[in-house]
Length: 233
Image (cartoon, rainbow, N blue to C red; front, side):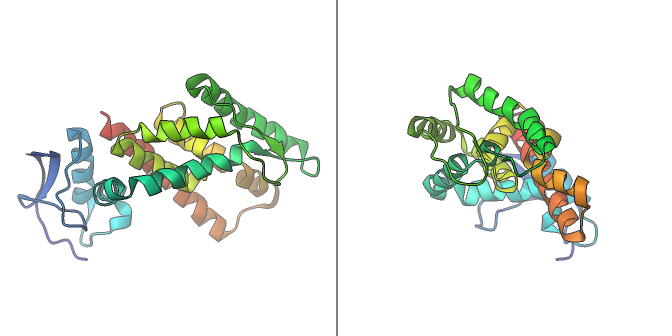
């Protein structure tokens, strides 16, 4: 749609901090005021609206989109969202390593990038996830999954929104949790999430579809971390 406003501002609302277009608070698709927990996040959303030129392009406004998702969907669908996120832990990619049919260099790279994250998970949350060679599924200990479910349940909706936004592109509970808890930054999360794909690209090259997908993953992880940082500033 065309840009229909001239001025963008930040305002105080009973529910938090809002963003205004020509003096009117903006709303979510569900017709609820955008009200976020920190002025920093509201200013970030305002900057996204300011950056729109003649056309308003929602895909270029991740803070706005994530905030609307949190407000419109997370409170009503929290149980379903939590269950979906915990399923990432049950089949976490960082637990599936190269077998003896794969180059030894790939296994060494997986150990270098993924083992520190599993060690952090153990030290930070007391959770030990099992690893295996190959793609045959393994069953993670029930106590470990229950503990991680408790970690997710303890998140406020803003961190949960950031976590959900990181888990989807990374396809990893561990990587997403490390990102939103500050153990790694977005670049490190991307390197860990795209380790196998990056290894194959280094060997065989990259096509246009793979490039577009990787750009999308990097964008989403960066947005998730920035959203978390601003929501907790």
